[in-house]
Length: 66
Image (cartoon, rainbow, N blue to C red):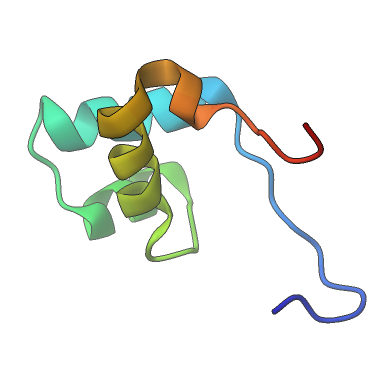
């Protein structure tokens, strides 16, 4: 749950696609991708990969408020 005053990081579409490419095509581990792209959240790359496999690039769009 979000805490009062907490800041959220928004990642660009290019960062998400690069993370997915490194994971799927290059075979990099999530930890290596996190360190390379500077992503502090452990499950973020896994979440992006699952959404990409299910819905393609449309799954990576921010759907909040729609």
